Amino acid sequence: MIFMKDGEKDYLDSCKQIKFVRMEDVFREIQTYKTDNFKAVIEMGRVAIKASLYVQCAAVLAILAFFSNNLMEVIRGEITQISFLEMYVNSMYCWSFGIVLCVISYGTTYLSQYYDYQNYCAHSEELKHAVINGENYTMPVRKIAYRFQYASIFLVCVSYVTMFVGFICAANGMNLLIGH
Image 1 (cartoon, rainbow, N blue to C red):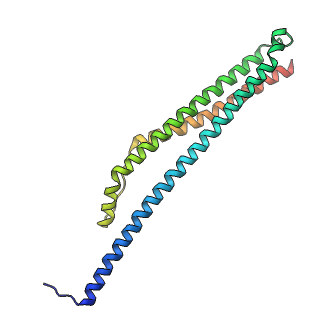
Image 2 (cartoon, rainbow, N blue to C red; image 1 turned 90 degrees about the horizontal axis):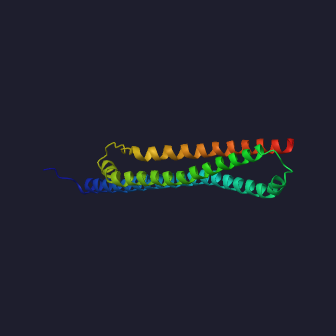
Image 3 (cartoon, one colour; image 1 turned 30 degrees about the vertical axis):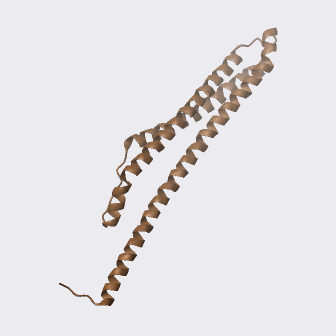
C-alpha cells in the first residue's frame, strides 16, 4: 500500500481534472469541426446546384419568349429557315435535361449527407472512448455516402455541360436566323 502526501494527492486530482477538461475540449472541437464542415459542404453544394438550375431555367424561359415573338413570322412564311427552330428546340432539350440533373443532384446530395451523418452518429461513441483511453482512432468510412457525393458532383458537372451545349445550340440557331 502506497501512502501519498496531501500535496501529491491534490496534484493527481488536478491532473485528472485537467485531463477531463481537455477531453471535453477535444470532444467539443471534434463536434464543431464536423458540424462546420458539414454545413460548408451543404452550402457549397446548394450554391452550385442553384446556379446551374437558375441559369438553365432562365435560358428556357428566354427561348420560349423568343419562340413566341418569332412564331408569327414563321407561320406567315417570313422566316422560312426551320433549322434555326431546330437549334432552339435542341437547346431547350439540353437545358431541360440539365434541370432534371440538378433536381436529381439535390436528392443525391441529401442522401450523401444522411449517410455521412448516420456514420458519424454510429461511431462517435467509439471516438469518444478512444480519446478517453488515449488511443488512436480512425472513423470508419461509409462508402455509400461517398458514392452519393461523387454522383452529386458528377450530376452537377454534367448539368453545367448541358447548359453550355444549350448555349451553343441557341447561338447556332441565332446565327442561322441572322444569316437569313
